[in-house]
Length: 364
Ligand code: HEC
Image 1 (cartoon, protein in one colour):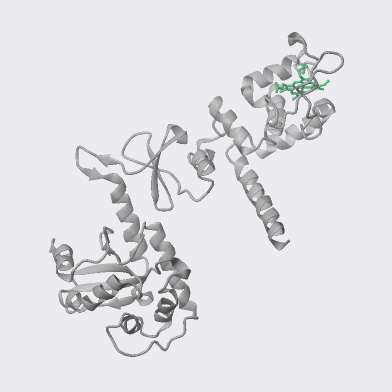
Image 2 (image 1 turned 30 degrees about the vertical axis):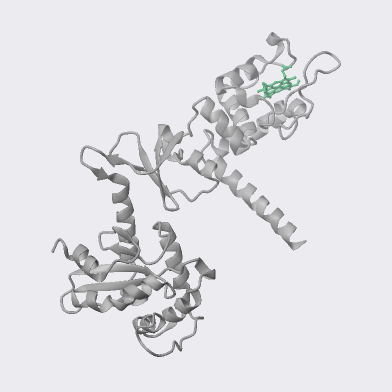
C-alpha cells in the first residue's frame, strides 16, 4: 500500500518537474500563454474544448460528413504543422479545405494568434514539443534561454548534465554527466560520447579536462579532513589515494607509505568504500574518519600499527566517507586503490613504491 502511494507520488513529482522544466526552453513566454488562454477561451474553446482537449474520436467524421474539431493539446496531429501553417489555418479557417472551422483573420491580430498557439502548445508534453521543435528547427526565444543539453537530458532521463562549454573546435561543445564526457554538435541535436583527441599535437583534450576536474576536486579538500602522511623534510610531491581499509592492495601500499614519506612525498588518503555503504570497509572507514587522529586510525585499520580502533562510526565526520565515494564515482574510480598525481592524472591500482617515487619525482 505504502509502496504504491510512493510510486504515485514519485510519478507526480517527475511529471511536475518535467513539465516545469520543459516550458523553459520553448519559443514563447509565460505572458503569451496567459494572454493566449483568454483568447482561446473566448474564440476556440467552444469547439476545441476548454483545455484544447476537444474530443477523443476526432478521426471519425460526424453525421454531416465533416470532421469534429481535433484536440490541440498535442494528442492529435497539430505538431505536424509549422508555426506558419498553424497561423494560416487559424487565419483562413477550414472552409477552403472543405472543413468547417471559421476564419479568424478579421478577429485576431498576428500577435494574438501567436499567443493562442503558445497557449495550446503549453499543453504539449515535452516529447511532442521537442519533436515539433526539431522538425521545424524552432529554437527558444533567446539564445541564453536555449538549452543545448535539452535533448541529451531528455534521452538519458536526467537533468544532471553540466552546462556546455566551448571547445577549441568550432561548433563543438563539451558537457559532462556522471563520469562521462559528451560533445554536442548542431545545437545539441547530435552528441558523441568519448575522448576527443588532437592528433596533430597528440593531445587528448578530454583527458586534460578530466585531470583538471580531478585536480580541482581533490585540492579543494583540506588536509584536516583527510588521513595525511606528510613528506619528511621538503615536500617534493603529493600523492592522493582513494583507499579502502579492507582492500589487500591498499594495505600493501600502506606498508610502503614510509618509503614515500622519506622520498619527500606526502600521501593524502581519501575514503572510497568499495561497494559503497554495503562494502566490507564501510563501517571501519567511518571509524577512521571519526577518530581524533585519522592517520593513526588508518594505520591501525590497515594493520601496520597495533592497537584497536576505539572510535565510533557514528559522528558528523563519518558522512565524509559517503562524500568520498560519490567524489570517486564522479572521477571515474572503479576500484581501490586509485591514485591521483597532483596534476590530476589517474593511476589505477597498486604500484610498488619505487615505481611511484620514480613517476612522482621524474620532473624534479
Ligand atoms: C466552430 C468550431 C471551431 C472553432 C470556433 C475553432 N475551430 Fe479550429 N477547427 C475546427 C474544426 C472542425 C477543425 C478541423 C478542420 C475543419 O473542419 O476545418 C479545426 C482545426 C483546427 C486546427 C488544425 C489542427 C490540426 O491538427 O491540423 C487548428 C490549429 C485550429 N483548429 C485552431 C483553432 C483556434 C486557435 C481557434 C480559435 C482562435 C479555433 N481553431 C476555433 C473547429 C473550430
